[in-house]
Length: 477
Image 1: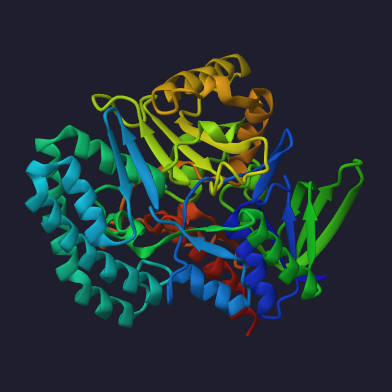
Image 2: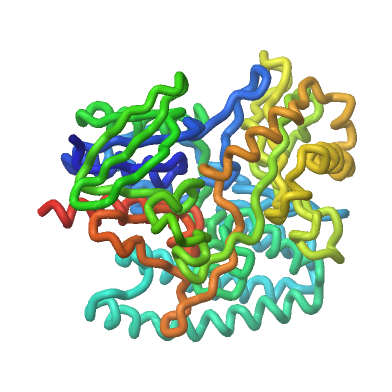
């Protein structure tokens, strides 16, 4: 008998289980796909999710979580934090505001004054958004004191409208600048309609706040979370399919292991990821389920499709950042087959690198339509990605050592339980925030997942896991 069962493969589920375990809550985590932070394709290890890691600066949200859990994986601050590549332009997003503004001014000399003014205002609002998140983990105000704090935030919400007007003015004068900001939003945000929200200020300053990577890959962090669960008399199950959920004062879960053997497990509380493919099991079987109905009014707009390559070190440009957003055509919509997000390992030295090939993932976002996600179409899409990358990596084809298209297709279809799609979310009428409650109509069942706090991007996914664990902790007192 457990105090809590968590079902989910994603980061927020692992965080919820680890935080609960650290509070003395006996927890079982069921990770159906067992992906966690990485996958092995060929003989290469890739991060499952190419979302840049933020919030690891002193007193930031992710840093505070690691400190509370006493987890200290080796991390590196990236500088530049990322790059945006357009035809004829390459922008390095440095983690120093002056260096970043100088870089943008170099590419857009006629917009220097407006760009400087924009980033000065952006930085101040970003700090206000960061402070709000740190003290209001649910984002939406709930208590009387929260609303008092919200009133204090109103000047920044007004200033956000002025900042958006500045951005519109700059974008109207230069479409390349507009695409750079859209690409940055696509790289960092989980929303397609996020560019004018208050928390877009927070995400647009991600480079200045710091972007990091785990030295041993994302799996190192997931392994640390799993270790916390197991050392607290908890249970971690991977590659087990949940087939039934019996609700009541005691939650009963039936699951099947790889051999087909069915087993059951019980707990007082249940946390499920919003990305769990069988989330309908906790609802009335007679009702049709959609994510939009369950955490209204959230709608999935695009799913990521990733191809995985092993390339020769000679193919990597000397100053290529770990994360790169490549826009093929400045005249097209960013999501109209016009964006590729690259993640490569940190490249040190061609002379000393002993590896025969470097892992490089290339991600695009596709509508969730059956014909688009057919194997034949995904094969064509994978080859199209290679062709579109040719202008950025002109010697790519001749330097590909490994291209696992079939494996990439299989992983991309399964990774929906881990990687965040792009959401379309209607902001709350009163606050203008896009944050959803993690409670359900069942008193002992809670949700976790980035879609609940998508306004905050990566840190929203971290917070959603913390919030879910805290709900159970409060109930047990």
